[in-house]
Amino acid sequence: MDMQLLNRVCAFIWQEADMLDNNEFADWLDLWTEDGLYIIPIDPRETDFANTLNYAYDDKHMREKRVKRLTSGESISTSPQPRTVRMISRFRITGDDGAAVTVRCAQVLSDFRKDSQRQYTADISYTLVRDGDDFRLHQKLIRLINSDDVLRGIGYIL
Image 1 (cartoon, rainbow, N blue to C red):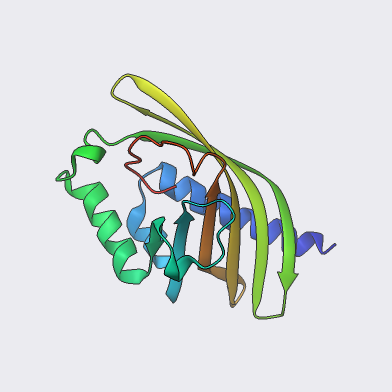
Image 2 (cartoon, rainbow, N blue to C red):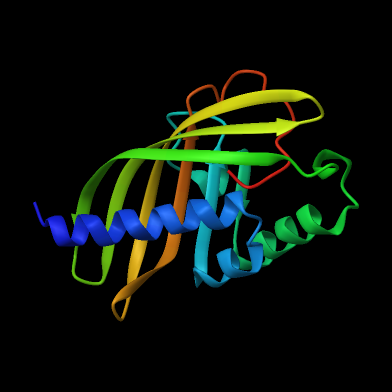
């Protein structure tokens, strides 16, 4: 196992989580490749995301629109804006072709909004493209463990 690569990957993903928890959405958008995809499928076994219904299947344009909704105050599901804390662990590099690294990890996200706290647990798969000594997000696939159950409105980026 390449511990140096694993440490770099973990640092990048922890940085992304911190950006989201601290509402640094413009910086988060800058982490992405032009053709990157942010995906949250409904069916936990789905693999054909382009041809099925998803909670999110966001390209660059849709990620920008999602951030605008979160920050504009015009969306009732984001007012007041939730406070979130993400805990990410269990990192495993599943592929490295020299240009891109694929990694799986677990996330527990807690949010607090309108006197209510909720928790979402997910397996996340990242495809990170090398960009010099750093990475860029090419794909983030979030598989909520309860995705095929009734979910309350999620007014933030998982």
